[in-house]
Image (tube, rainbow, N blue to C red; front, top):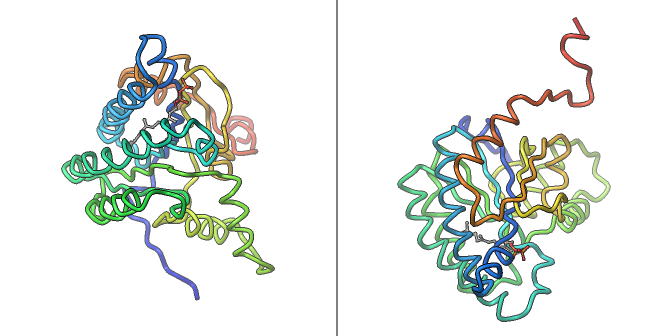
Amino acid sequence: MKRTIVVPASYNGTHVGIIMDGNGRWASARGLPRTAGHRAGVRTARKIVEAATRANVATVTLYAFSSDNWSRPTPEVGALMRLLRRSLLIESKRCVENGVRLSIIGRRDRLPASLVVGIQEAEALTAHGRNLHLRVAIDYSARESIMQAAMLAGNEPMTREKFSRLLAEVNHDPFPIRDVDLLIRTGGEQRLSDFLLWECAYAEFYFTRCMWPEFTEHEFLTALSEFELRERRFGGIPAQAAS
Ligand code: FPP
């Protein structure tokens, strides 16, 4: 059965994906436990989401917990799960005030039950937000999602649009996947780490050595203005050469 999904017009602008790397190193450099870095990371996430709303960004996707992060020491994983649960509770109220719709993408079957309930509550509470669509990736693996969507597709004739809908379905995303326009990674590494592989086909990248807890609104706006200057050709030729 074909589902008709209407994406609010306000979500159709720029999509920024963010790999919030460097929390652990930021904390260790200060003699703090890594979890203190994650707590500081949540504060940065809040600031940047507010800045994105002011800058009229349509969609932000934050990489909060990758499927490979389960391999971290059990106490760190436990602390992250509790932090995510608490942050969703607090942040969803701010999201309502700022007209932000919150969706969590990724698997849910391995998350603690209390976090799954928190996700459902946060999504229901913020469902009417139209200023920004904030997607937070938790237990997310792009490769896993693509494989799951391919399994759903079976032998059906496929288009990119149809496949995007299947990907949204496996990720619990309310809307078909939108391409990432700008991908920001903090923490000095220059790789995608299994984040939004399908959606980043034509993304522009902005890598910074800044650790996530120190990433500022100013640098976020710098990344956006650098992005505005990039010439995006999508496999075509420069506009001037075509005329
Ligand atoms: C990467 O730093 C960061 C994470 C694995 C967790 C990030 C999660 C948050 C900031 C929570 C966001 C929550 C909401 C609800 C917005 P790292 O530990 O890999 O740092 P390192 O590379 O220095 O070790």
